[in-house]
Image (cartoon, rainbow over all chains, first blue to last red; front, top):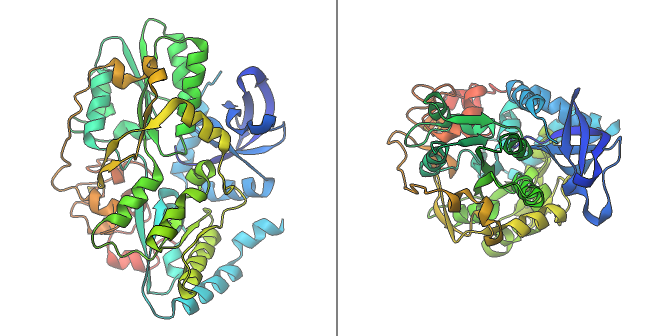
Amino acid sequence: MCLGIPGRIIEHVDPDNAIAKADVGGVRRNISVQLLEADGLSPEVGDWVLIHVGFAMAAIDEQEAAESFRRLAQLGQVYEDELAELAESDIE
Amino acid sequence: MKYVDEYRSPEIAAQLSAEIAALADGGHHKIMEICGGHTHTIYRHGIEDHLPDGIELVHGPGCPVCVMPMGRIDDAIAIAEQPDVIMTSFGDMLRVPGGRGSFLDAKAAGCDIRMVYSPLDALKVARNNPDKRVVFTAIGFETTAPSTAATLLRAAAEGLENFAVFCNHVLVCPAVQAILDAPGQDLDGFLGPGHVSTVIGAAPYEFVARDYGKPLVVSGFEPLDILESIYRLLQQRVEGRAEVENQYTRVVPWEGNTRALEVIDRTMVPRDAFEWRGLGTIPDSALGLREEFAAFDAERLFDLPGAVVEDPRECQCDEVLTGQIKPWECGVFGTACTPETPIGTCMVSSEGACAAYYQYGRFNRAAATAGAGA
Ligand code: SF4
């Protein structure tokens, strides 16, 4: 729950509700990008974000994403559990 | 990718370690890492093995599952037991023991309790089950509070009438202050949490430096981030400074995520007081729903026992959460209390210090200092 996982925005699914699809280590699920929409700016397709419980919380760059993935993978079970929970997610 | 290589570089780690040792100069420095994510990095990478003996890292209260008092778990279960209720929460919550067992026990006894990844998933359960009352037990620091807040706003916009939140969001700064106010407190500085700070920024910690004279460095999660942050803490001490610094600028803006703070403010207000496991009752330390969201507030919609339940006698989570003892010093650590059969909360969530010590084989003083985690 506290693990921030990097994801890459691949599609804007429902712009009215700020729902976008993100690719998180190969798992593709809808997330909310609403909390990154300050000043009318929304993350664009291709951007990397840090995701907590289905919400993009911070914009990050590709290097930070790569480094986070490497570190998360080292956590083993903790990270696998988080990804498994994400895979169950079905946000609309 | 110079950036990535720099983080992995053993040479830089060695250089930082040497500089830390020079700054420490044989003295004793007690540093608290507030966040459970940092605890993980510290043990996964054996950070303590790169530090001189005089630097003591103690774990703080930054694991939201760990600080949930037993009475709140019992309240959540009391809600789950009501007719036509579907209770939802994060996976971490399911095994947390209350005075009358855990969510998992209640589920085995027939309650409809479902794990969700996101509060938005709980919202979907509500949409799909219009004849049920769907309650989301919300936990977490400011990291997850904006998600609950945004979900409430969406529920209100959709006019959903069968969705409610049992709000247990807690605030990091009042907990840090409670630790600083505790008698006998002898900390020399803090590693500030990374993810909470993406939301609140670095500015709210300024009281730590200003009022208590302790340095705090908001830190990233890479091993080199932690080493660099410890280096910066010691540098401040050597120079006689106490300031808030942000080492994790690549993710944490000084002012935080203003949009996230705004949605919290629209839906929630600080409670007068909240009971924390291990820290007691702390004023203004948790969030409750605003009056305008009363229709979504499980605390207003359901009768809750609201009892204060004493922790089991053998449980020493309070001392672990305040950095007074290391997990292996608890009498039941690794014997009666394991991740499979947790007695205390610190063994439940992967962010808990006891769970981290257990996972990385730090079972006793020898293992805790012998480099078992590298
Ligand atoms: S070993 Fe168990 S009871 Fe003891 S402090 Fe850790 S979680 Fe609490």
